[in-house]
Length: 102
Length: 155
Image (cartoon, rainbow over all chains, first blue to last red; front, side, top):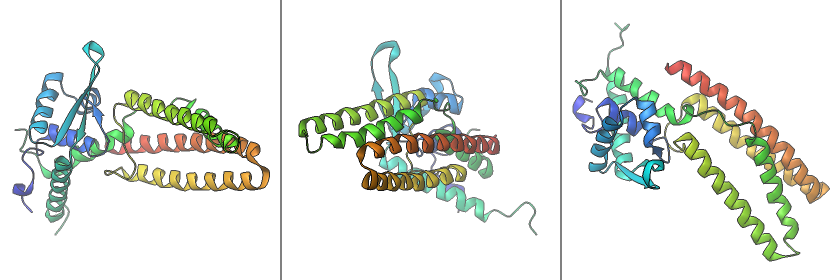
């Protein structure tokens, strides 16, 4: 396994964190992702737009005006990409020599 | 810089984020177990209408189902994310609590069915209220403890 097996869209830490959260939830709100990844509104919007453009997540808006919320759910394509990325990462780590090894 | 991440750091980001939907929520309010106990007792009680009035039975089912839907809506708005057991990669501590929860549900359903068989519907409703309230209270305490362990491990 090599770095080339990792998905370049998911590989950045911010998008990886968003994908990992969405892989473990039916959906997550913009606020939840923002609070747990620790991003500004504009940065999170940018990251989520990239994931949406790749077809990995789907956004849904609820309500209108100041009380409106946006939530995100992972698409099937996103789920497949995430699982493949995760498997490649764990395989890479398994290949790594142990720090205390011979 | 952002993509030149060390793989073990990458895994850590992944583990923390995967755990967030399970452990990043505010604790459940105290009234949730008795409310669910009451809901389950009412659900059973609605079977009293089964032979008396089909309309009342269906109406009760619709109201109770709507109540669960409203609760889930409120809960997921409050939490901001809705983890679904059986999907994703919950932390091992939480997976253990999910397993105990599933066993607990089977035990309670079996116990309530037995009470219904031997003592009738009214007593079964009472048993359902007590067992579901006690079971959920215990689950809440255990889950919160497991979530605290996960938060500490990943801090």
